[in-house]
Image (cartoon, rainbow, N blue to C red; front, side, top):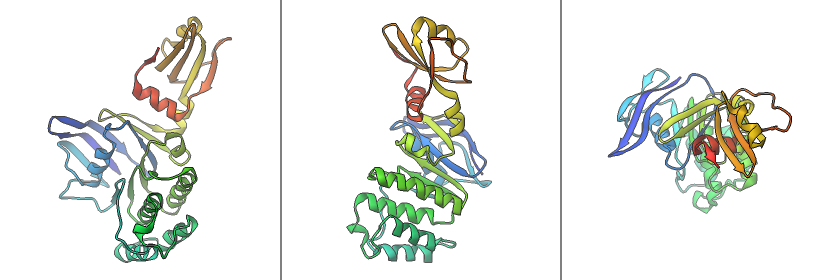
Length: 281
């Protein structure tokens, strides 16, 4: 459905995306992770056809993507996007008139559930409510690829939980590719099925959330006992305090010996270790 074939994007002497090769063959909710400046927004803008690749090709549903060939199947909403200063209800009705297949019932239901006052104008809403309204309108769209760039900025804890519910309900109503860029790693894991990690402009990992949950773990114990266990394992980081070591692993699970504990590594800690280098020694 989506393919990046050796794609590079440079801004002058700065390489934002570096020879990415990536296939997204099927529908699902994908979490796009990366440090600030890793290339997440550039990745999304390239896929939406908002900017041109310096090298390589991008295709969506078999059609090449570029600014002169912006894909109709992709809807990209950038962080901080704004709407016309209309009433909430009018914005939803206008979107329904402009977009074929727009699910107006879903949009109105979600707006009511998240207590968006239908009579309030866009500029009267809080920043978080503006973002929620834009997200609802985007997800009610019938496009087959949705790109959401930091959609939970300005959300409190309750709104972030509601966002995950919204994301799942939208996907079940209209299965498609939804790619969400966020820094709230463990929270998005409640909704996402697959994970894409970008680091320094390259795809470091593309895997299922369940696979990461199974293969990411920590071995803890005395360093002299833990170190021999690491031979042949993919150790993504270590934390050492005196004679005690915690080794963070992304590999098949082993049966640890007596004196060594095996604990689940959270998605956030997995991300920190896999992009942050091998050691915190």
